[in-house]
Length: 173
Image 1 (cartoon, rainbow, N blue to C red):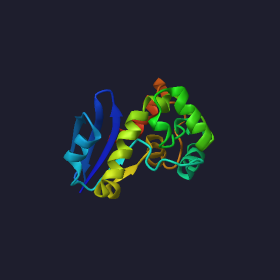
Image 2 (image 1 turned 90 degrees about the horizontal axis):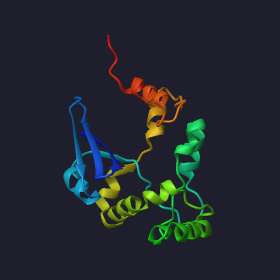
Image 3 (image 1 turned 180 degrees about the vertical axis):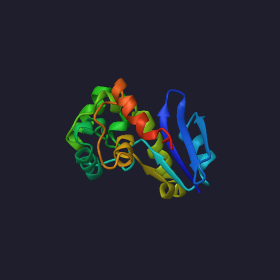
Image 4 (image 1 turned 90 degrees about the vertical axis):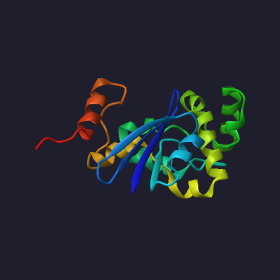
């Protein structure tokens, strides 16, 4: 059984696979379809990209995640509706999302909108992928690894890096 974490990166998609024995592997894939081709037979895939785009209103999972993350709540971006992902410009996407979901998009969300659309298309086209790929949020994972305590610092700050590293580094005996 393998567990795979995947996230968008400049060159496509970055994946880390880990099995129950602690063996791991990494890879970079140009498209999400390329990634899926490499890992479609593995057990669980956790992806840091929104799945299940709203037609109207906000997703409950985002609202609940923001509550759990407390001071790190801003790391959960507003999720665009599918119609906003078809927009040609940021302003057009904001207008569409405001009308249908009630909020404009952040520039961060717009900057990953092509990646969101890429995953959305894979999941809409592939039933097996829908059964195996789950949305995951890194800050929520760090909260769980820290015993239910949200991170105190942004991941972009040196204190935030140290805080996350201390959770992940192997413990010496």
